[in-house]
Image 1: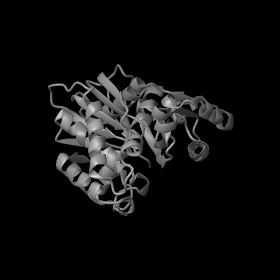
Image 2 (image 1 turned 90 degrees about the vertical axis):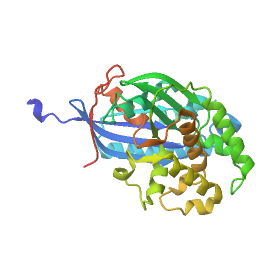
Image 3 (image 1 turned 180 degrees about the vertical axis):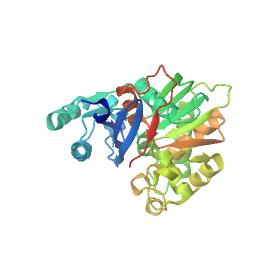
Image 4 (image 1 turned 60 degrees about the vertical axis):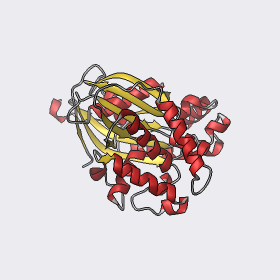
Length: 325
């Protein structure tokens, strides 16, 4: 058979987090990654986890429904291999194995629960391979539902990382019970964020800060007043410190219903956007970054790069990534 008639392999990665479950379907061929579909579902798998230590039955059912839809889509798209990883919620929950066994029995899908270090490496890989100047010292901030990964590196290599327990769902449930949020509640949350960020040694070099995850993309969408998610306007958008401060003031002044009506803000993120924006703002202050890049990529991209052998951690080379169509 002629090699030029062999179809590229179609693969999928699923990132199961505390707040969202993400799906990426792509084709990998000759060191390239062609994105066919990229989806997000706000599931809140880790809802109440910090109080109870377990995943609730309701949250697990939401997770199963999202996975059922994703795997059905994978079948429709002719996906040949599917990789699934779990992060903060599945690392912490006492009944994590119970949920994973349910998934395996229902869908024949194995979920690999990755460490905070592996999560940080996959996040960094996704960003380093996407930017046009991968040798610039990078500060990658992966704001999740249960934790935030802070990754420092350059030349395609991770130099330091920390997984901090300051995810958006965790902080919102612990510190922000009022609607609208009261000033003492907000100050207590910021104090906790600053305390956790002190664990990360700030290097004495200028850094290019990159935010990955739904918080950054939501902030970029609001800043541009987008009526719908438009990845071509969100991915690689540059958010300044001043713009972020304006949004923080806005979210603090509004109640939940008003935030849900904000142009550009996904309603499912209205209750956690203040916590997420605060994490990014305090990180900018901690590392002296006047702005940050918004990336729509993340663990799911890094996972496919790794599984497909497109960009091993030891290599700073940059693959080609193209979007749907």
